[in-house]
Length: 338
Ligand SMILES: *Cc1c(COP(=O)(O)O)cnc(C)c1O
Image 1 (cartoon, protein in one colour):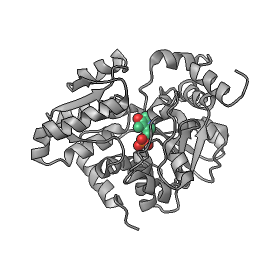
Image 2 (cartoon, rainbow, N blue to C red):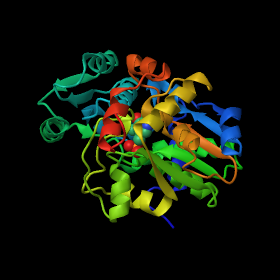
Image 3 (cartoon, protein in one colour):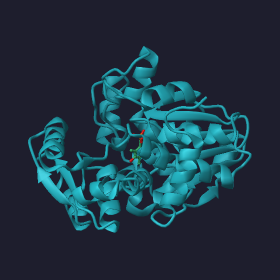
Image 4 (cartoon, protein in one colour):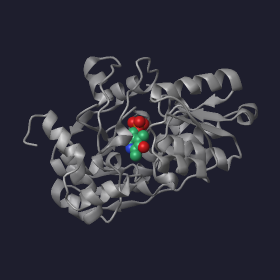
């Protein structure tokens, strides 16, 4: 089977971005192994430069631009981990980067992106307004859009994580990874199944607002309401005209597991208290899924910790065992005692 992104593309991406990203550590977790009954390894991509794996895809996409495109510069509408990664990768290349955001984005996120040298355009009051500005900049100023997930070079960049996982744990029977737009899952699954077709790849999302899961269940890309979640980096849709990641996730993922806000909080807490790692909600869902017993591994497991860009006040609340606003809203929505 040859899809839009191949293992060869991912191997080429690995060589291309080698000097621009950190090859992150893999650490055994005896505590999770005791719970899961099989060896568990944590791929600590939370330690990646810019705090998430998004730098892999952004770096690969930028490295593949022509000189003429590099001279024009890049643009994206993400204020989260993709925006930060793109700003960093563009700066390394000495390129112009414009990040479009709505008025609602908090000042600290603005400051982070600005400190990486990117230009910021503040437009409107929603992500849609920001995307309109991206489209305008592409049309009027010739900037090149680098989307956060539905793009072959971005998927190949994220897939380099799958190669590193199997290099460090060649006997892995299962890898567990977060899923939002599916660029990460599509890339890792392509790499892992390309190297070892028997390895299972399990996706994890938050229960409320899981666009990829709803789309897989519906057999086509669907929209879901975006709701507040501890796993904020997993929010947002997959795009009704999704070109690549929907079909790749449909063909390559063995299962997608959903978690409550309380379960995600338990994952963050375990990573901090037991593994001594700081993770954001999206980064903790793999570990959280293992803690719940919602997945039953039959051999060595690799769980990806995908990022650490969490608001530290929120993190403190979670690790102190305080109930967050997200857990309260989740309990109300699902009819459990608030
Ligand atoms: C973007 C992101 C994800 C999800 O990646 P997709 O390619 O959108 O599925 C998971 N974790 C973190 C930390 C992220 O920033």
